Amino acid sequence: MPGKYWEDFEIGFKFQTPSITVTETHLVNWAGLTMDFYPLHMDAEFAAKTPFKERIAHGPLIFGMAVGMAGLARVEGGSIIAWMGVDKMRMLAPVKIGDTITVHIETIEKRETSKPGQGFQTWQYNVHNQRDEVVMEFEMKFLMHRKNT
Image (cartoon, rainbow, N blue to C red; front, top):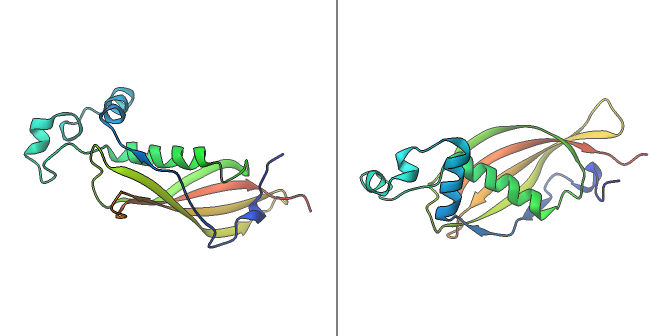
C-alpha cells in the first residue's frame, strides 16, 4: 500500500528536492549512454567559441536529473501508478559544469478518473540553479492511487 495518495496532494502543494552539483562526470556518462557527443557538451575548444564560452550540460540530462531528484526525494510516497507524459518543456538558461541545481515542484492540476481507485495530477517542475534562476521548466503528468472510500 502506498504511504500517500492522490488526496494528499492539493493544488498548490509545493516541495523542493535536495540539490546536486552538475559535474564533468555527469556530462561524460550521459554522452556515453545516449551517444550525444555534440561538441557544445564535449569539446572545450569548440564551446569556447560559442555564446556560452564554455561547455554546457545536455538539456535531456538536466531533465533526467530533475526527474531522478524528485524520485529520490520520495515525497510522492508511492502514490504514483504511472508517468503519463511531459508537456511544456523549456530550457531557459544553460547549465554549466559546476552549477548546482534544485527542483521546485508544485501540484497544478488534479482531476478524478473513471476508475475510483485512481486520480490524475499534473506537477509543475522548475529547475533552479545556485543563483535561483529557473534553467528548465516542464509539466509532469501522473496517474496516482486514490484512497479506497
